[in-house]
Length: 130
Image (cartoon, rainbow, N blue to C red; front, side, top):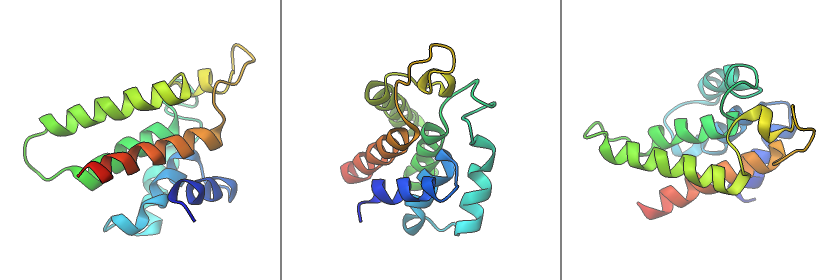
């Protein structure tokens, strides 16, 4: 099964978007499942209960750090973090959870499943470049 579809399965199992993205890469980190679930727990409904960035994007940024930070200069990591953000916004049309879900407009820009899929695809692309 593709990693991005695995993440969607995690989402459907009751985990939030951030947790689903983190767990999709569990095999790539030294962190165990419980730790990844705990790290992602506050980001159900995005940051700040739909007020901020989508949880899937938050999970992607966390995973970017876990998979690419080498303890050296943070410049390359910051550049990659900006690219992850930009790619997510391009693919999902927005980054704020409430806007993605159409909370104010009534028009869903990107489903949770697609946000999770896209976040995982973006991180896979980053990993493949290294």
